[in-house]
Image (cartoon, rainbow over all chains, first blue to last red; front, side, top):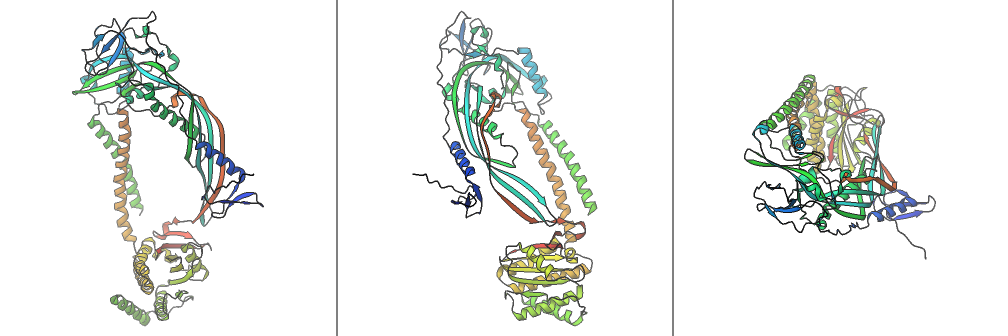
Length: 363
Length: 264
């Protein structure tokens, strides 16, 4: 038995009637006519975009740490903030990179999971400090006396645990779009608006999306120092921890998946949307996304933790140990801010006043 | 109301007694195809408006019809003004109050010297004085108020004081200076706020654009055209010599001003 399909007008939603003469589907309500093939494609695209999104991540199986002829490691725990950090057994006295506490307790090394990859430090302490000075120079309202009155409490190189997410992602979407053209004759202005439905589908792969696996570090700081160059990542070897500290993850891979999904969804939608070019407006109506081959890996990434005391307040900065990118909040000089505001206000007011005077003079 | 009617009749009497009877062309000033006005009211208004025309050389007319059809009421008013030969002198100076029963709307169309005298501020004033009566269904009072106010405006213009021109100056300058204060405030606030963002580089990164492998492999890309819509609006332009009047072209190519009015 033949399938009877009812198409609805994409403009007003009224039922469409097939016109045998013009071979189109006509809307008696709004008067528009549509090609049958156009509506078939539209229906197909809308069905694809209405499918439920799927996020298929392979479960991460942790590996226990077993030294393989590498250096001896020890556990360091901070009684102040509770951080549990792994490090070189011969590190000697050290302080907590997160809270600056100096009474850190060394324990026997146990229970650490073995990371898959590590990106070794590329920026040394001096280089990181130079990067910080550059960041200070680019902070527009930094107090002038910050450089002289600040006290660098401690700068520590730490390998921070990250979950790395790889996936291939299929995405389909339907957009409502318009093109607008305008013209005039002697008596009227005309505006013509063409309405379209755009159907897009494609696939895009992601590699090494990092999600901070330590609850000690604020994600704003850790995401602020991205990106890392993963071409420099190597298989984990404890030898890279010599003279350094390495935090252990305390946010599970499963708990980090939501953040990875959010970033993948945002970017996949952005990349697909960028193909809808040449329109005055493009509004997403439906979209569906599914992941395949989702892999999760455990990595250690290098950062410098810098704690600075200024005017009795502690400022925390994170510096990418590979690129020198700085993330943190700088103290603000209210006087500098007010001066900048006043300068902009004055300049724009002068320009506006000149226009007003010229305008009133003409009147 | 009694005072208004008394004043109105007094003006009629004065005009009738002293105004010179100069002749212009010759549609009666008031046309009522609907019956909003009684014959006596039409006669009184015709008498008054003919005297206005004789005194100032300007048509002040009223046209009431059943339906404006599918037209914009302003364009309909322009067409009636043009094709029915309203307007005094070779520039067709005048103003028309147009009232349509379907849709229930009214508006004003000006032409020639009427564009200058009945500028945007004057049209706003006429809308104000007639609108109250229109909404109350007091059509005669609405038309009488329009006629009286138009007469006052013509009198003022004859004395060199076009309605609203001085007021426009008084109003424009404070607004211009107000904007000159507000715009820098907005610009300074936005630029300071944007610059302040550089003081905090610890920000979430909601994108994974830096981790895209290769690029997008686009498998479907269909742009389906659905339909078009065209809107047509009369061209409006502010002309320097029309004294603050917004003008447009009618379908016959005549320059008109006016507008205002609304639903009733």
